[in-house]
Length: 231
DNA sequence: GAATGTGTATTCAAGCACTA
DNA sequence: TAGTGCTTGAATACACATTC
Image (cartoon, rainbow, N blue to C red; front, side, top):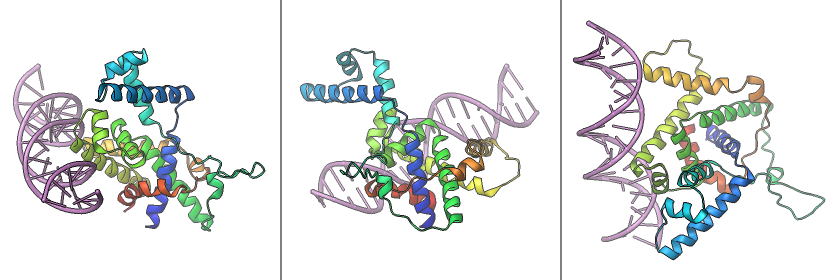
């Protein structure tokens, strides 16, 4: 359970780091959403991508691209000000209680979070979309299946695969195996673990300030993922 | 270059857990 | 109890690597 809590924090970091979307994308995304809702109510069904594109005055490919970009992005309001007092602007992060952990535990925590952040970031594209979409954005398998153009069962399988990859990727950071991997699969796994390691130095990993495990609702949503990865 | 082996991606069907 | 969401195993097709 202890490891699970720490991994949960790392996942939050990872998702947060993935929130790259510029304001222009957000604006267009809102417009897209609005147009889709309007079309849906007037047509009495979900509008096709072509209809949506026509309504927006853009190309079909552009709509597809936008949907994908928006889907990938995640916004977490950790910096959201939670007080009305101008002199005391407290953010969600500020409101989090000090857990009183020892310094060595804190350093270990930061390293683990960093590893997991990179592990999520280096997942194959579709697996990453599923992890973020399912565990963080609360999308159903059906939604994800529609989005990726596969069946729900395939989503389930890829979700399981993604969790296994995350677990192996993290474990590899602590195994220090010198053995040359044999076989294609093992080499790919080793390469995945290596990419996680190479993304940041030890100093960077333990030096970054880990964001607290804030937002109870959000934490509850990803608890299932944490339990699976951390067990 | 062809044959073979291995891994990956996918669908389908059956079944489980939960909820209204 | 029916509906929903999800998981799992079997089967298939395809891609890529290895061997001869």
